[in-house]
Image (cartoon, rainbow, N blue to C red):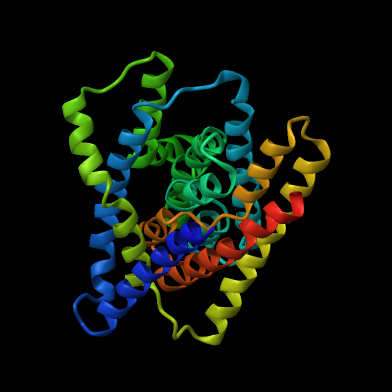
Length: 303
């Protein structure tokens, strides 16, 4: 448990470093788009390539992937409807920031430490659906509604979805695993080196975007969106416990995943959609603090 707490504390400390170097002038808020591009287009895809190269698809557990997609979609639709009268930028912000789960950098090592290494495969399959829902559907939908000068069409949405480097990476890697294709060791050596920097870069990005001096209106909005998110976390968990015919172990892992933090890529997506980066970074940071305490609590409640 001490090792897990240290891991969570290290993530928060990296966010603090990002915030501090912004305050002392080493970087500025104007540098955020540059850092987010490095994360979304270089380090995160490389981390995905490395982890997926030896990922084995367990077909009888693909319902976990479906749950990851559905959980994202339900929250994205809710965010879209909640801000229906506030314009496309507000809708895009809610689509990106209410849903999505930080599984790879946070939840997976956290759950593995609490429940053992066998839990990783369940979390990984959920993360495939989570990533398709967030990096594919959520990204494309947010970008399409954010452009208020152009009418949202199915073709335009699909085009934006496939323009997401993360979605394309997931899609190619998933197809490779279905056909049991693996990349050469030399490629994985490169991607593991670059991808190893992803957790640091992603948390640093959030710290650079973080603004603790939010005005009262943005504080209120942030906690409103977080309340919606964790309301769904509770509803999803109850539905899983009552109605999903799987083992208690799988139910527990899913419930813990629902309380994991917002995906770090959400802040970068917010910037690309022209949204409020500071509020997104604040929500992300708060969700990490909530995840640190909520996930072990879920395990205790589930027994």
